[in-house]
Length: 223
Ligand SMILES: O=C1O[C@H](COP(=O)(O)O)[C@@H](O)[C@H](O)[C@H]1O
Image 1 (spheres, rainbow, N blue to C red):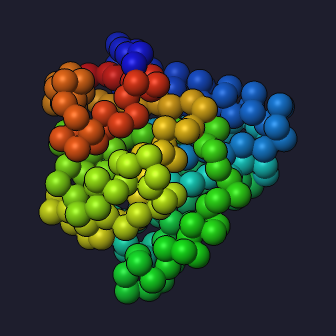
Image 2 (image 1 turned 90 degrees about the horizontal axis):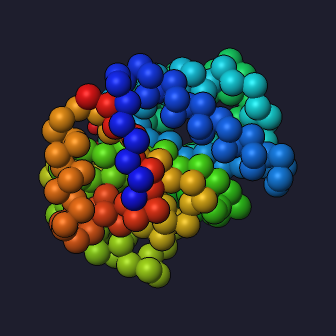
């Protein structure tokens, strides 16, 4: 793991957005297309604001969330809603959003169709992850019902996930999909998450799911 610390959040958001834009541009130059996977939640909005204006070939970029809460886009809890409002606008409006939600009562009903949509866009070129103070990343929560399956080497691409701390049911990319990404960034803010990161280093992925991706990740932190 590599840890980058920044003097303040604003500087971190700008610099991480620039690093991601550079890595996407490299992929686009070499492969003609790229896949960017991003978190939802409260942290990444400012990175999305900057990225949405960068001058890259967004028409050949697929954007996929790390995970989604099983709620419609009209809900304030929807990660898709955040990505549409903050990332897929301006220049980035041309990118293609690969859905992790479709209207149905449960994620299980739509899982096969969502996996079919995702498969052509793997492996991920640039992966940006968040982390909760409970050391969850994507929707890999400690104590979640299918965590062990999601961490295993032969996990499917996507799994439904339920955990007390998660609120609603979730759909998440599994650990092998996250680990296969060419560039892995984890974005954390504040002393509580920094302390959680330090603790995660000595725990197992079942105890601290972020551990599953830490070895090859660059962690970006600002107070
Ligand atoms: O529920 C979620 O939480 C994590 C962390 O979110 P934050 O609000 O603490 O930044 C996020 O990375 C994940 O995508 C989201 O679904």
